[in-house]
Image (cartoon, rainbow, N blue to C red; front, side, top):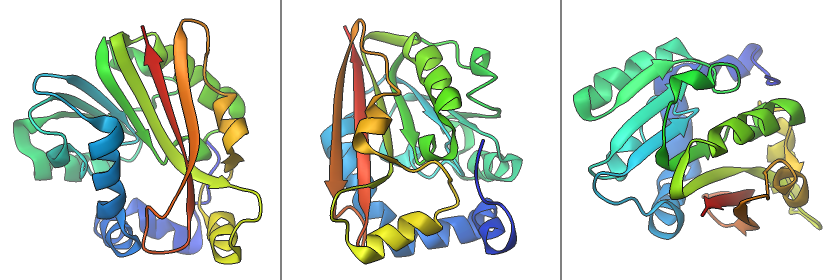
Length: 206
């Protein structure tokens, strides 16, 4: 996993600071958009979130059978404290420990993780997890991206991100399997309170 973890970047590994930064940037607006247009969970759906952080997305998903996975043990402990028995949280690496996610899952969520992985890691994880989708299941990812004629502030913020593998939309799309799957890959702007660009990928089985 390629990411910056020294100096000020250590702050995002601490749940209270991570949450505060996310809220200031406009996380809630972005998540509302995702929930209404792309996540759209139903009661009883089996959901996996890889890179779940402190589990702050779970309350927005409704009555689902939820499994969250994250590398950071401090985030996982915070997630357990905040969500109680509403979900299951495990500390693990979705790239190398995919056996912890047995599935099948109706929805796999991967927000802000792919740009921390190199191409081989990302493609391997996506390939393994896509095999754990239920019939008509969906894999939804969202990551920062570079676009043509990008706002200079958005470009600088992307450059400063702790993840060192921010890609263009087409480069993200190339990580996903296309045989037996449908992929909707697009650029999104305006999800945050600051100039920023995201790449959304929705992989659907069926």
